[in-house]
Image (cartoon, rainbow, N blue to C red):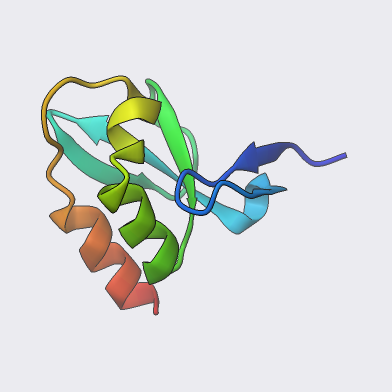
Length: 83
C-alpha cells in the first residue's frame, strides 16, 4: 500500500507518487524530486493552480514551520518547466 500525503495547495489527499515534495533551504523553496532531502517537507501537486493556492494561503510557510517570507521563484520556475 502506497503512502498518502495531503497537497498543501488544494488540501486533497493523494498518493505520494503523484505529489512533489518541497523543502526550504535558507528561505528558498526548493523542489525535492527524489523526496530524499533532509528536513521538513511539504507536498503539493505539480500544477500551477495548487502551487499558486499554496503560496496565496501561505501554506508552505505553515507546513514547513519557517518564520518570515519564502522565496518561491525556484518552485514557480520548476512548475512552469513541467507544465
